[in-house]
Image (cartoon, rainbow, N blue to C red; front, side, top):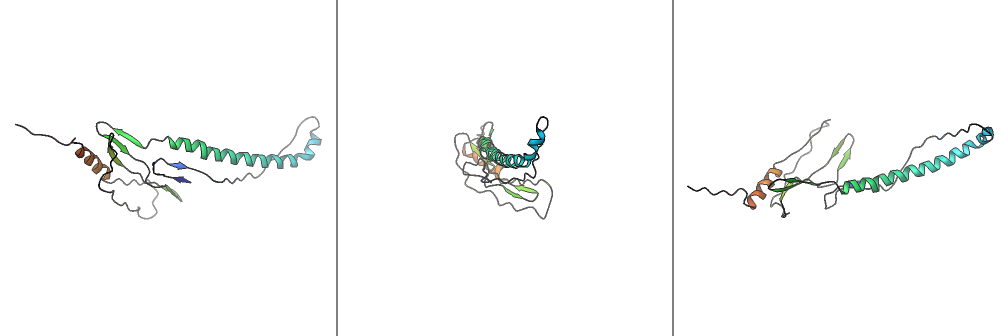
Length: 163
């Protein structure tokens, strides 16, 4: 599962593993191989069980440790010169469907050293119509509004006209 805690960094975890290792075939060659091959099915069965266990342990480690470490270090802000940073952390866990992934990102601008949230909320975005097979990106005026709000709050937009 993939989730989005309060930090906005995506997290990933797997609680189980299933495998589909169909067949393992063992055949000995040379020397007394005719004798060893009498027991090759027993060896193959034992080897298959060990491989299944190793595959699941490796897959769980790859997800729960390796992928989790990478996601924990993923940048969720980008600096904006002269203003602060754009926060694009996840707002909720991604939704995976048949042929699509849906993810919501914050898209709020903060002043450097001031992470006060804007006094307004982003608009509600509706789902795309029908069964479309394309990339759909919904971008609202919320990002522009937060940039303007932060700039106004910190007197970036203030300008005095004099003779």
